[in-house]
Length: 321
Ligand code: G4F
View 1 (cartoon, rainbow, N blue to C red):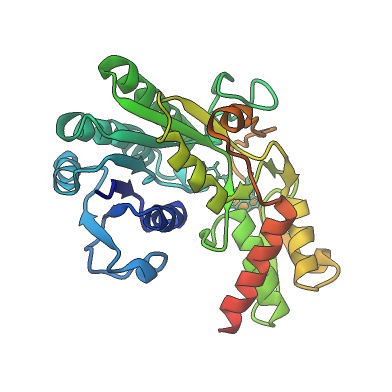
View 2: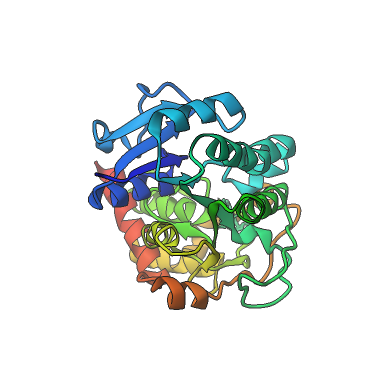
């Protein structure tokens, strides 16, 4: 019999890639969406008919319990959250409701309806914030620098706590930044690749950015959803850092993107705009994925350069279509 998976945040970047991966593996895929399941969801519309959508909300306990009762999953992937760090200062309490307490609601729903299921929590490198050591491992203490990071740290610890309190199979994937052509346009990599493509095609003139010196460990989202699945296939649940162990700056991202678009000197197109500078930045985020490599057999397959170039090509195709 086919295994059943339940994905919150199914209509986002990671949810759409994970759905494709699980369908390829023969899973019956169920997803949770906040709007009506009959609405259009850009990133998963090509999977219509292959996945079952349930309406539910991380703010609403009974909708989660009901969705899990209906789908009876073997595996639960909790990917839903507010994912934009920048807006978490404007909506700190909502961020906590969704990304912190929302995790407890999902765990409670699982505990009540399907305690034998396996649970994946989407934790984040933002929990390291003002990093206590470089590179970061599963043992590095957290020091979040945004309401988003603080909420994710709660979500991480409550996942560990339900594992230890109730002996549930719960895991937490500490994922560093992961990007793709499906990334939202507000995130810096996609903002850059989209603008490089648009400037190339004469559809935009300028690109406004915050700090060019900010650095991140950027990987390819398609590689990272494979790691999520692997975590739930292990004999015992544990937590894993998923990263590339390489750091690149926003400036380097601009250089590669504008080079791929054949635009020459990028300085003439880029302007600095203080509205994109954050009240507090994270520093020296870079992940040591050696535990994932040795226990899951996972490692990233796509370099930073390849990733940014494939995103630019995809945006050129998109804008030309
Ligand atoms: O692309 P970003 O907005 O991603 P951020 O904040 O690192 O968060 C992403 O990765 C986290 C780790 O996996 C996730 F938890 C989170 O959900 C999200 O997926 O910003 C990256 C860097 C920051 O330092 C930001 O200050 O780029 C800098 N930046 C510079 N100019 C900009 C801009 N970021 C955005 N979004 N827009 C700018 O114009």
